Image (cartoon, rainbow, N blue to C red):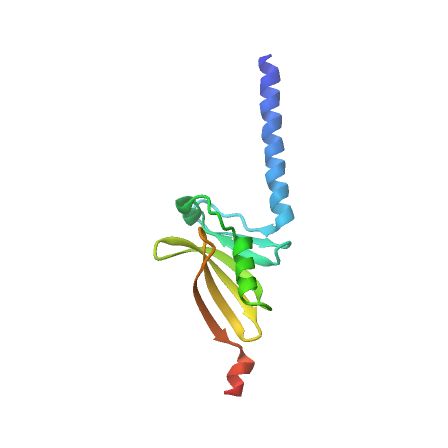
Length: 134
């Protein structure tokens, strides 16, 4: 009986490892980080890079708005924008998703509250073509 339990536990551990590995593989490439380092995932299905600092992730815990939802909030508010990167960040003591995107006007950076989904900050940098016209 004891031997059967050990085999079941070992098999479950292997299955869990394979499942987690497959999840990362299907999400795209990931960079392994030692504890405390930022983790970057290139999510092929999402079409942009996602960066999450493990320290911020642990401090803020589960957030109702994830990186993909934050990207959607930005593209809904700026039709035609293409998200290139989403990063978990902190602004005034609250968790925000820093969404970097590009649209016809140039590069934009939008902060989306990770708990409410509201846009709490925006910044834009004109494209080089627009700068040349000035």
